[in-house]
Length: 311
Image (tube, rainbow, N blue to C red; front, side):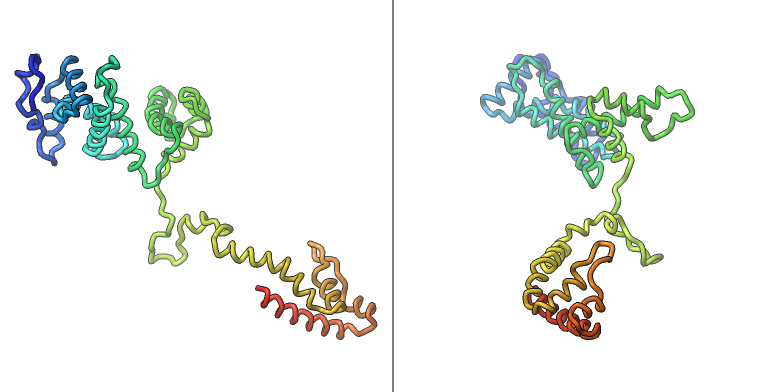
């Protein structure tokens, strides 16, 4: 790989700058090597960017990427507090750097270092959001902004605190209002993100345990039984039987049997009152209460058979 002729750094640059990058497996050696890679002057950077755009020059792209690897290392250090491997952060940042190099326009009047910072941070942010927890904690733009500002702002609040509550983990009402105002979001969103970040991943299914057979996990109380497919089908069937099914079964009865069933079972108030007793129906039809009961039992058997056929 050759640098453009006439460059002030040509004599200092190795014939193959890639040779300075050590093999995989040694992060410290890699970081040390990126600091020894030659930087490009403004003229060299613009020449390489134009060569890439006009001629698809991969050697020019390589020079642009190599000269900014130290920038990725510097930015990635800002995200070490999230507990993710530094090497992975650098790797994702390098992906962002390559995207920036591909889209860089040298005629816009800015250096690549300024343009690439956005792409490097964007890739690192996406990696953190996908891997910080099993469940993604931030999806909207406001939530992403909150996620990456909440920790630093909380540390600032703690540093300014002079009372005995300096080491608390929760936010006060004043701090919530201040954070919402600075980030231009609702205070409810600040409180929700604080809750998400302070909690951890919880298994929905219960962990196996020999101590108790009654152990259960969140899935036991988070499941929405009302919308479970089988329950929904059964509910629709019950509704159909309670309306059309019963109406069809009543049509199959004679007039006296139908009225006895309606008065005994259907004309009942929510509190259980209403309807006629066996003796009241017996007096109306001029028969014994036992006879009314027999007619009722026969009618109910006939309706049960009709409902089974309807279902």
